[in-house]
Amino acid sequence: MTSEVEHTDVGAYALGLLEEDDRRAFEAHLLHCGSCAAEFRELSGTATALTEIRDFRDAVEEPAPEPERPAEPPGAVVDLLRERQRRARRARRGTYVIGSAAAAVLLATGVTVGAAVTGDGSPAPGHDHGPARALVIWGERKTAQDASTGASGVVGLESKGWGTHVGLELRGVRGPLKCRLEAVSATGERSVVTGWAVPPKGYGVPGSEAPLVTHGGTAIPRERIDRFEVVKEGGGKLLTIPV
Image 1 (cartoon, rainbow, N blue to C red):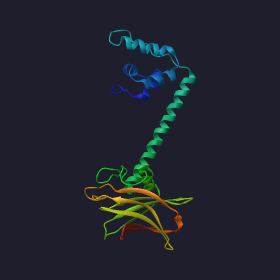
Image 2 (image 1 turned 45 degrees about the vertical axis):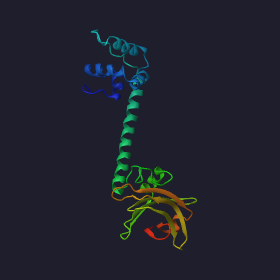
Image 3 (image 1 turned 120 degrees about the vertical axis):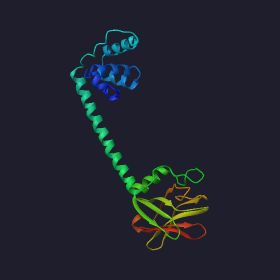
């Protein structure tokens, strides 16, 4: 630790386990770190150690005898510190595993996690990009592209008691035009999921790379949905996504 002070060394300092150089560095660190000082007070539970730190601060500019090491804490404090360290290690390992798994999924799916924006810098249509993106990433995913229109898209599906929650990521679309996403059942029943306007620069095209990300819902149950269609207002279809 001689080259860098670690916040986690507060436990080792409280137990008197740091080497001389490390102990000096950490005592200087305690003078400016409120979180470490608070944790040290919690772990040691003694006024003596705090007095030593204060004396060290007052005398840091002048040669003086080195402050004594903190008194050996009682066994209960040692047990508490060890348990806290075990919990912290488990939490760090869990966070690393979860973060790595999420990153792997995002890389594999190729889904952009940043907030989508329109060509003029405003947010892309959608009630909330958080739920929309989460649904596109973690829902039942269906993808398609249309060579004739250049559009491609991904839907993420989630069954609900009221019907089906649908997330959409759409690329390769230029405007200006207005569109809607329709759910179509095997019997031909249609239901509008959501609608939006495409600005002139479009979504997911050169010069406006961010896709459109939005979400909505349909009363048609998931098991009855046959496909989704991205339809232009006034007629014409940009994309069909079979499910």
